[in-house]
Image (cartoon, rainbow, N blue to C red; front, top):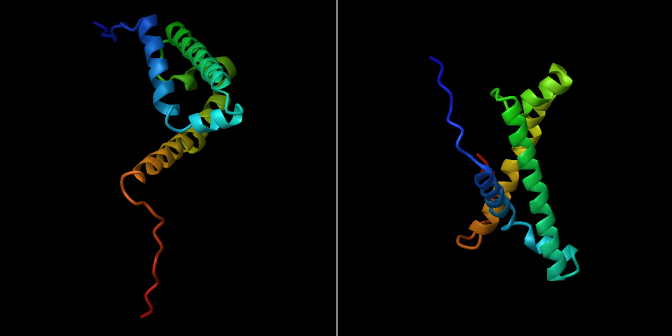
Length: 132
């Protein structure tokens, strides 16, 4: 008897997950930059946000199709391995570990400390060397 996960997510769920991720990850950090780079025009900034949301949705649909076509555990590593071979997949795995994952954590840390500073005074800690 083989057990497998029940496939219950549909297109509506996928769209809501993508919208939640885009709003949750970018809305608190990026709006000032987008508005500044769009010349202060709110309509242009909203078009940029809409385009980014559509691209994110297309990326999520692509991952969904890849997952349905190859339901092996491993995500993007497996897709790269099957398409390009083991070496690019291996390199992607280590790049994800050292660059992609750490960059994401660093971005979240910067955002967190920026907002934490609104509630609690945050300043760099300077080490004081005590002479013996």
